[in-house]
Image 1 (tube, rainbow, N blue to C red):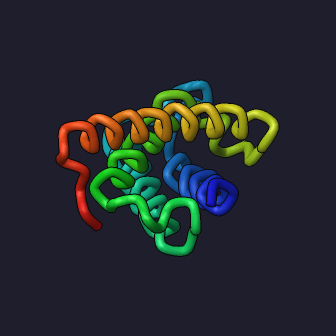
Image 2: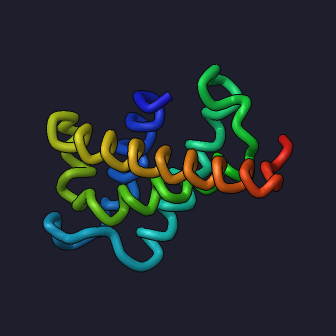
Length: 120
């Protein structure tokens, strides 16, 4: 799942960044919003096809996807996105995925403990 999402993220980011002036900058404004929206949507689309994620309630997984997309927008520069250099982007993407997954698990545990775990 992460590999397909990573490829989509880099390709989409390259398209979004085509008009951005400085490669050392991070996405801002509508380019950032478009990136986050598209990355989160792509993340949600991978959910049903992945045995590790398909049983996670959509409401929890959607939060995970938004977290991931925002983390990438905060950590990847335009140059990172355009480069397609997995050596540069993979550690950032892996850290974002791990952080957001832990946050989703913590939220799920809290909801379960309170008797409010969402149904699919």
